[in-house]
Length: 401
Image (tube, rainbow, N blue to C red):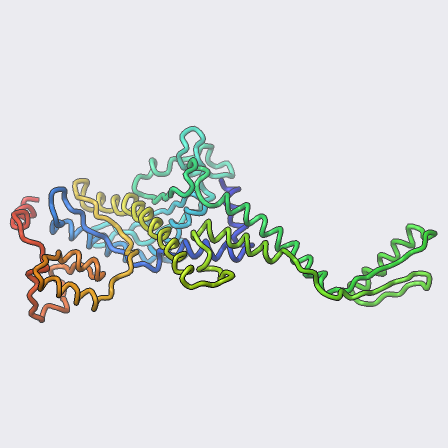
């Protein structure tokens, strides 16, 4: 795997378009807001107070992971690193903890290079392995040896076996052809503006005479100066026009293939022949679908490999694990939403406040948090969920717990 990863990195560093589309996808989630949602006990409609407090604590702990010097990276860098698994097939990061107020919280993350891992041929499991021989194959089961220490993201990209997952293989073919095309195109460009240097020799010329003629032509190429015998005939002809080349079309085609594989479309990276804005918007929707799929996959990895160990270490094994979500949906026009909700409420429609907050992108305030609407008298009886017995018993449950 380390040879494949080195090849993938080399191709990315040679091709600006390949790097552009990969970087776009890797950082697509960094521009999104995220939140930690409290767990809801089966049979209940709302989370308990304790579960809300746990979710608030986890969210604060993740915001506090700001990174540091060297290899210590922030939570935002962690998200981009995990999304890089779409290229290599896997991404692994180590959680670096610190003690704060009697709790263990993440201070930063060590983003481990994908070349440090290998797949066990017997089990297909991802293992840590040192290719210089310090660790014998098939390596160390790092997740089993250090539970709760590492985040390991292995997304489903092409449906192949684990060691052949990711976009790296189809993109390597395209990158190979683009590299050949650009190299040949540059060689053609070097010759396109230079004059043709022609030399003639007689049938009686010796091998030495022919080599001298070649040296004369090469000297003219380098310095434009040449000295030759009157028996040698040298002709210099400038090309009348550069011949049309298919190199540009081939490079554009291969770049479009890269965009399709990584982003699912081309019109947000290339203008296209027609440049239709409507087509660009349709293709952008395809890109959002991929972004939402990445968001769900990475959110599941963060919940399973980061949030769950934090909750168990700090609150015990019996506490429900909160959910982690990226806010991928565009929020509604809040004025339009408020007018619509007000009209429907006046008409007698009962609307859950949680749905209104979700549509408006407004989080649920905590009990002791100062709110903008505290001093405004508003009748919200029609916007709240009906009370039930489980809410009345919540205080007693908390005391018992």
